[in-house]
Image 1 (cartoon, one colour):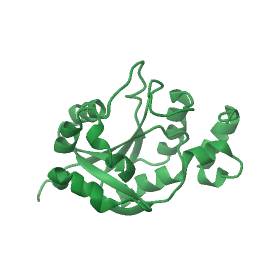
Image 2 (cartoon, helix red, strand yellow; image 1 turned 90 degrees about the vertical axis):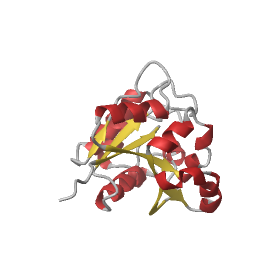
Image 3 (cartoon, rainbow, N blue to C red; image 1 turned 120 degrees about the vertical axis):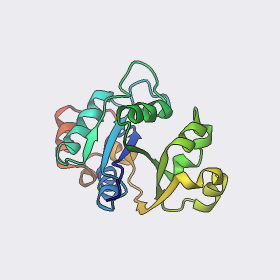
Image 4 (cartoon, one colour; image 1 turned 60 degrees about the vertical axis):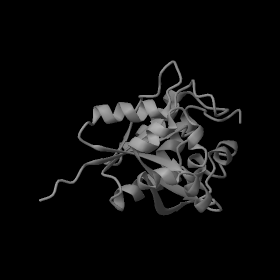
Length: 197
């Protein structure tokens, strides 16, 4: 019987807050056999590209509430350090941790469009498979043409991401509470998160 590598997906992001589309993407990738396990990796407090981030420990705890319900999902605190952690460092960490596994990077098409500007982007694109989640209205062909040298490592997923905005949820938790896991919503309410927004 041919050996089938155990495929692990790394899903990074601010998850501010984590919502049902994040869950839907994760479960779809598992159900459709793109991955055997998915690890959410929330950005730390030093992440400089997002405004209004609540403390990383809260974002980690909310993800933990989601992943505890599914044996194929995990959350990692790897990026919760007192310095900026770059994507290539995170992927290298997991590749070293799971030496005999295939590590996949989960990326929205919006992020893929400027991945060539990231630190050590060539290293990422040459050494890891990238699972790309589309958004409605994205210009897929232009982006893929720009990255044609790495076409073998880029896998576009059939699932189209719904335009669920974390910003929209943060601005009115009550109206958009249906977009959140029930335990995540309770956590937000208990800890008085996003009140100032």
